[in-house]
Length: 289
Ligand code: SF4
Image 1 (cartoon, rainbow, N blue to C red):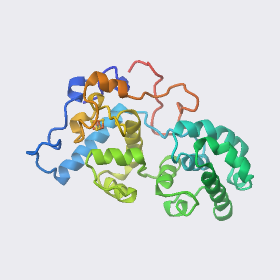
Image 2 (image 1 turned 180 degrees about the vertical axis):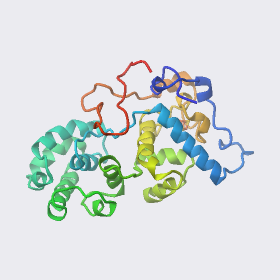
Image 3 (image 1 turned 180 degrees about the horizontal axis):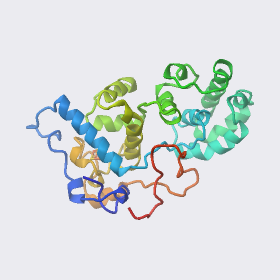
Image 4 (image 1 turned 45 degrees about the vertical axis):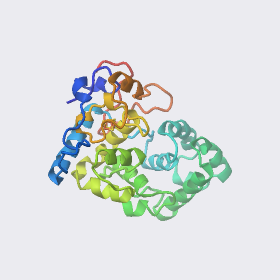
């Protein structure tokens, strides 16, 4: 099973749009459906991951960064805003303050003005000043590569720490953001709402080696297809595996209109991940599959 042809995701694989629009059989709300066994859940979860890997072979962090400090700062700034907005903001920020030492010594008001477009700029500036000073004073000006150290930095929780570990240090981590939580609950991989509990339950379904790329794939799917308010079920390549099929638009033509494409070529859009990054960059819009 792969993506429907001529859809945003379909450019990445061959397709059967009829198949794609069929609901998942064993979990979908039928009264006669038996509860899914643990083994069946693990198999279905891993199959969804494999399908998403085919659909989004280029999944990658959508924040622009050149080093671990930049990724840490960009991730802190990404709270309550889009990655695109952050990517439009960080070039000037990193030009002004390239190192933790530089940022720790920044004039707070000047820093606030630079990051203002990302929203909540006073609180974010406070976090950036605090974490830069902590990096300078406690970690020799380097971003630490351990979760237990990262979460001691101001403004850095498990989600941010896992983004940095997974993408700057190659340490597997699950990024439980709003997309991730929504999708894994729709897929009935977990019923938990608390991000730490979600992280623990999803971690138990997959080998560690999958955690980072799984996170990117889920977030890609949440941004492009399985939206919070109007999921594009009728154009979804994993519909046959999804217990929530039908929560969104099931008509294939209407669903296709809900898909959000890669913003290839737009300012701030990452098209060239770091050369050693395991994923592949997105094809330009309109490129043949
Ligand atoms: S769009 Fe979301 S809810 Fe709809 S079938 Fe796909 S994964 Fe399930």
